Image 1 (cartoon, protein in one colour):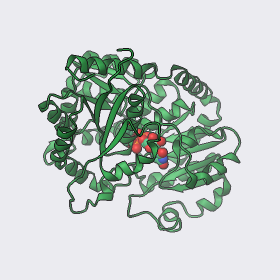
Image 2 (cartoon, protein in one colour):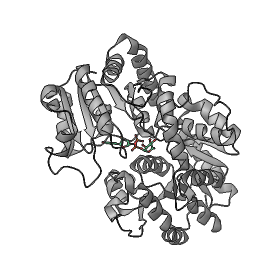
Image 3 (tube, protein in one colour):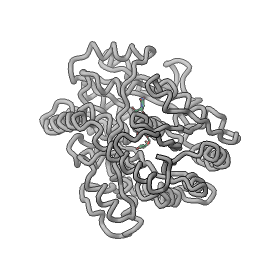
Image 4 (cartoon, helix red, strand yellow):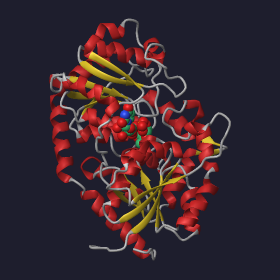
Length: 455
Ligand SMILES: C[C@@H]1O[C@H](OP(=O)(O)OP(=O)(O)OC[C@H]2O[C@@H](n3ccc(=O)[nH]c3=O)[C@H](O)[C@@H]2O)[C@H](O)[C@H](O)[C@H]1O
């Protein structure tokens, strides 16, 4: 395949969450660098958040294609994304996405790409591609350990998962079962996920690398008929954001590895109880911290005076003073994690956050909330690059445990091996470069050759 002259046209359709859009965009950039032409399809509001990230270098090879969702009551266009979506509207967004399949059919018929790369929740996309004799390949943005865990349970109910380091705590099992039961219009998400996996042609692409997930990649290949192909960590390059420069200037004044970054992704909103225990835990830890606090769009404050302060313990901001910074809504996470003052990341363990922390050699204070995050947190501890904050038997956080784990990870003796392993793994990730993506490209080109794509 070396020196392939003609480009391969790929249509990409990620799920509508930033935690999916971002990895798909990073994959698009890697493929564009290797003579692929990408049509990146999502809703206007999602495309609006990434268009500035498609620099001159990529703009000829990555084209944005708008997918218009039907306008449903309660779901105006700025809600056609999971970013900031009030949680109760998630089923409506999933329904609207389903209803967009005729629009997607028009797009794929007019573009006639050589290949479709799709996500985990829309089996109608590969089905439409297949009806046009266009091969479809799934790209999973979550951890392979999670995919493995779910697949094992569905194939071998009652049999222990063969990796003892990965398990669910009692209080997580209920949420996990609800996740498996969640459905839209009577069709379970789990069935759509299963169908998407099944429809993927020969291979399934996964956002990971063998140093941390080889055993799960191999096990998943063994128990399914698919070749599981890692594409690497796909960690986004940090971009300078003028409007956030105050955050970097604040960090510049902190000592090396003295400061915690605290963030829980783009979809999750902390409960009042968790918010309180995390706040007191940060206060008790006596460490510097920068904490991203988010509220569903529409509940955000017009100033930082109302919802934000009302959601923090009384006098908290005054007591922590310049030791702490609370940022509402959004922070330049990639830039913060690469800053020399950062000594730990209090994270929900969303998969992109885990990859970014690892690549920057920042140890993780794991605080999983839901979805794949508990499995990701177990993996973080198993790999040895973080320590999890344990909840009590009812799933409640306690400030003393939060403070104790934070101190251990950032400076304590117990966290010394974690800090060392995090640094070592980050260095390896940098040294390994794009090893996985080159092998994945070989697989995609082979697939196209075999399917008479126009390579
Ligand atoms: C795949 C799946 O999608 C979701 O992702 P979510 O957005 O929660 O978290 P990440 O995967 O860390 O993705 C979040 C991404 O947003 C970036 N970011 C976030 C907040 C902010 O203030 N600034 C930023 O730059 C961050 O750098 C990362 O790239 C689910 O939770 C799930 O657990 C996860 O595995």
